[in-house]
Image (cartoon, rainbow, N blue to C red):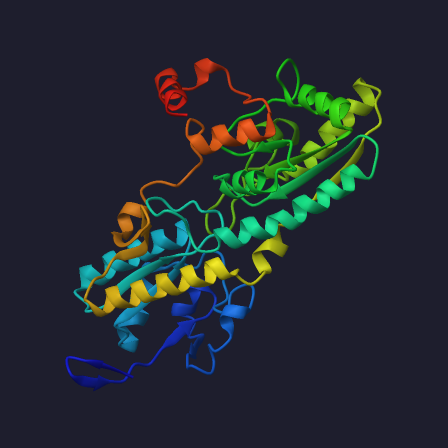
Length: 357
């Protein structure tokens, strides 16, 4: 219940369970203050989630049949693309419905906005896995720890977790190709670190080196229900490759420790920073819908909260720029090879960044 134009108006808040399928599967729950009282303290998703199930026509039919006039769609890049389609269909039918997107993905791959909800929590929790790997490899001779983190196309979690940890020797992300053998390759770097420190930690984004892995695995081109290409397990592959190389080629015994905390990170409650950020996003979305806006996503742009057309944030994905300062800082922090020849990046861009540093 609230005041609008001086009149008291009742609002019925519903949520559809199970992602986009929830719109036409009739799985809805009435939201009351009592129901949502402590959901911010829970991990995972109170709304539940699913892959696929997006049928724009059915979804808008359901919105129209139920007389819904405000729709808030929470999720990452794929979810926002779905929201854009719903908004267009609503506009096409001439419905008086406000469609608002709220960016939530730990990968931080939504374009335009400064960061997405869940990213800070993921980076913080990733530290536990990295710390565990570091403790383990320090406890054995020639210990090599590999920590696989989420990041299908964007390596932000791996990059920021590496910078925050300072215990990581090498960070591999989808945006930066790497190679194993030869001068400047990963094998050579691992050998140098083991001789120098007796141990090392590698942080690996799940989307890194997929082309490389596929050369060994000969995978079938399979996709999930949402149309995303199924990734090969680069963590297990790299663990095997490193162990095989040092055992068979270098005749050197190593102790491999592999940690995959992916779903542990997804399942934890948000931290204080993300709780505050989520509140700001929610307030902004509601204020925008109440003001009559539609087809927008909320989020900070250059530290100022803004309303952004959904089409703008779905045009491209946010990825780590190898010529930006943050990646240069990571390379300086880990002292790892760039795995890039100078000819493979834009010389002018590199020169500009070096002059700014």
